Each structure stands twice: as C-alpha cells, then as structure tokens.
Length: 95
Picture (cartoon, rainbow, N blue to C red):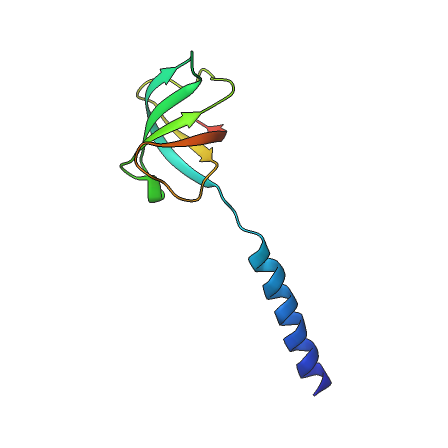
C-alpha cells in the first residue's frame, strides 16, 4: 500500500514539473525569398511543418552569407506556431 501511494505521489510530482516547461520554438525548412540588410529581415516561405506554405518574416541581428535568395535552409524560430506574414526572431540557422 505504501509503495502504491509513493508511486502515485511521484507520478503527480513528475506531471507537475513536466507541464510547467514548454518549448516555444520551431525548427523548420524555409526558402529565402529576399534579404533586407538595412532592416535585418529575411522574407521566406515555409517548406515544412506548421509553417508550410506561409510567408514568414524572420528578424536577425546579423545576416550571414547563407541567406541567399532562392536557397533552402533550416531555421529555428522563437514560436511554436506559424501565421502567414508572421514576424519571428531567428534563433539559429543550419544550411
């Protein structure tokens, strides 16, 4: 009986902590449509996941050489959902 109570208590504690933390990021593939170095923004089209087919505006603090028009890249954005013409902070890039 004590073991059953202990297991139930442990399950409740684990459930409490696991629901307290959520990931608000998406790792998606995009196609670069244009790059605006003056405003540090990239206009792209989502190719995978919940962003597929959406036009995305990605803000970056430093634009790198991999942001070439027409190139497909993987990016990590600061949201777990996508909206057409949504503006997102670019957190990471993988070629």
